[in-house]
Amino acid sequence: MCVSTCARPAGPQVAVGRTDIEDLDLYATSREKRFRLFATVECEGQLFMTPYDFILAVTTDEPKFAKTWKSLSKQELNQMLSETPPVWKGSSKLFRNLKERGVISYTEYLFLLCILTKPHAGFRIAFNMFDTDGNEMVDKKEFLVLQEIFRKKNEKRETKGDEEKRAMLRLQLYGYHSPTNSVLKTDAEELVSRSYWDTLRRNTSQALFSDLAERADDITNLVTDTTLLVHFFGKKGKAELNFEDFYRFMDNLQTEVLEIEFLSYSNGMNTISEEDFAHILLRYTNVENTSVFLENVRYSIPEEKGITFDEFRSFFQFLNNLEDFAIALNMYNFASRSIGQDEFKRAVYVATGLRFSPHLVNTVFKIFDVDKDDQLSYKEFIGIMKDRLHRGFRGYKTVQKYPTFKSCLKKELHSR
Image 1 (spheres, rainbow, N blue to C red):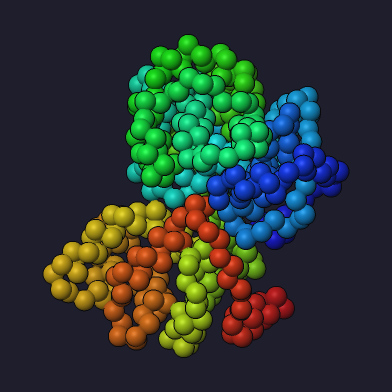
Image 2: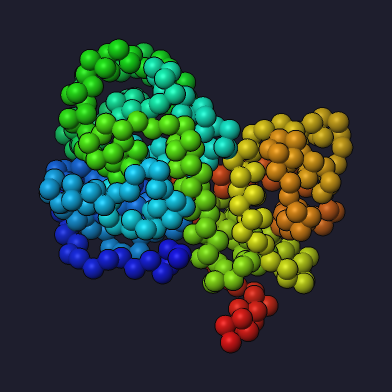
């Protein structure tokens, strides 16, 4: 089931906390603005996304409905979270199944965005970062280090301004006023310059876990239970998370988002057109004139074969390894060798272990081969794909969907 067919469950949408919404956006980062734009639930002053909201935030350009926040009491929230399945029952349809029966905090939103852009090899690193005592299990208190690290990074980014407005914004995002004691021994400028993933990777081990442990009960009491916390650590918060379940969750999340994007174009078929594939690749990039790339596909691949989901998924797994691939590909540049399809395919395998089908490689080349010499422009390809990779961290660009006549005809015949 794709996002476009996921109807929002009926229920009153209460517009609450509307005062100074626009003013608060002036003090918010782009990530904070996007979270506030898609969040639809408020509990005791803190904003949350539902699982449905998160899916929309990473697969669409704008919310489908007017911005309203549904106010929930603690009792209503706890009742909602009681339906959360345990982590061992997770699947690649978890977010679609939960829809609006769950909540995701701002720091969890950042964490989930990190997951979407990381290779599978990074899953072990992420787990080990949370596992601060090295017992191969992560408990709720250890996971809450994430909350502190992202909060402290955000505070270091803040500029001078209206203290009352910034305090209101922090309350919306974190649910409590920031304590004065720092959890991290980190230079402010270093935090500003790094991504949330790098901040997490470099600073979890530096977190003063002994200090955090002393304050663990206070922090646990301050933090509202969420779908992720209940999913990972149970309704009582006493369960522990092992690496296998953690890995499965991260892999399922990546798969679920890709399935939603694929299904939104396939209309129930087993493939999407090569032109639709190009649309998806260019969607969250800074490419101004996408028509050049789309015309490349339209005229270079006259016989539409289609891209399967396995090909689609393997390409985005490759994008999550883009840095390693860029190193491998750059070696051809140093050797003054052109980058043809064979070189591209070999570089992908060396850097990621993935084997692309000949048709997928040919399609990628046809999209980006602007001068029609069957060679890949290294700088242009890497630059555009870096934009696409960071879908949740950079600006969102709407790419209008123009289905080809052949694609429409094929889908029409299929429906008869």
